[in-house]
Image (cartoon, rainbow over all chains, first blue to last red; front, side, top):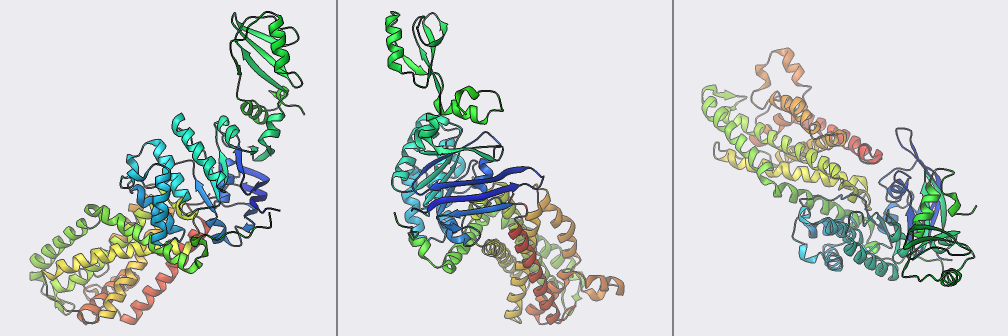
Length: 308
Length: 272
């Protein structure tokens, strides 16, 4: 059996003002996983990450990193984690290279090891040319990458990213995805929170959805997507598709509901027999997004999407 | 896969003790780099104001005052002025550095790392001591242009300066922990530190005071620091016995350290 990279049991957090951010959650992330922790704003994602990284004090519960209880051996547990926070948290007047090297020092790396790893990760994140620039002169995307380099400088086995691609353009986002996939393939366990569900769907193998301080779903991405009973396709053409629920959007465009058990082949056959030619086809919305909305929406709204 | 024993990277394999030492050194270097980077704010102003004190109080007025506490007035004020610059600079270094670390949230980068709170505290205090000593040295060199002096007891002089710098660095730390906005780190210096320093026997001997105010002055810790420091330099016995000063300042250092560490362990102002 593999030790879980992260194991959380009965985690509860009540803030000083009485707000219960986490109502006793259990969560396990396997070593080598690429894990998505999703949830609406204020659901408890950042509180959970804050507790894992000891930025937030837990009210109750246990957190283990690769089997090490953070309460019992905080130094050993912390050395295994790298964290990329949601908000920029470096001194904007410091130089890029210094920021990363200082972090290496915080983790106890010798000056030499610190310098070697700083160079390695600044190069991998395309920031080596900027090493002597003050952090305030970096673009938004570079600042994000700086925080990733900083989180990796002590070569953690578990990398936690709290919305790493917020406000980053699509090109940089894609290169960050490629980088993270590479890190994951090399053995780093990755936990990601994001508001871009496309990002979670394409990167992550397992997923937990947290809402109002509780885990409302915790499964594999494949199983979760398998829960979709209806997918809506937008088909660009004209009407009359026998056997399928459809809505005509305009003269050239249909929305076609495909319920579980129905095949696209059958839909195409029906379209064909109706004498309609399909020019293009796309999902109406991102599949994970559909599920996410139904899982976190208030009761009675979009349940039709998910059975049970 | 078998029950995995965590693979130790070179960093993990290092003993915690040496990792703590590296972390401490890193914080101190970072702190020193900070006050050197902003030297026009941190090193130059104290030098200028102390030269003004030497000129005005020492040279212009001092020549008419004559002797004070067994010394030329100029010589009498030198230790107090050195001490004053050490106190304010140690204090404000830690107060503003820790506050901005908190404000910019870069404190998080220390909190996520395996650094014991005592090491974080020691790092910031050492940074404050470094700036205090740096400014103290500049002022001492300036003083050398106005008055000739040799140091009577090197151990006492250095010891007193160090303890004072540590104490006020801790004071600045506690201030920063409770500070919620930038104004909060100038209130204590303005309303507590400056009055205590000016009334701490920098410019006059307590002998000049009426009994009542002399007694009140004995409750001012800065009196002990200045008096003993003056004794360390000139060997002229001051307002209070040296052993009492060392004990009192040592006591305060222990008290402030304990309080600071408690605040840090509790996460006051930094951990939700």
